[in-house]
Length: 102
Image: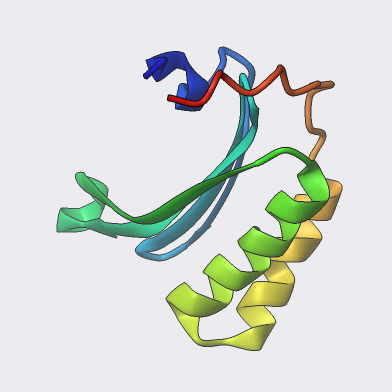
């Protein structure tokens, strides 16, 4: 398996945080990687609760909403994540071709 499929590029990504919870969106070779989870030990440890790669930014936006709601159980914090997502200046990014299946 080609490990570069899910490796973030050098470009900056979107990060939403609410106390010990986070959702990140990074451009990767095959699209947009969304990672969500929690911090512990005062932010010293980062625990990933889920991740998914999407070929378009609209689908990644939907996952940001779902992840923020899953982590916080508060619709107003989900809305905050979406407002910040919508105002974030994402880099121009075109996903490459998917690797050959095994």
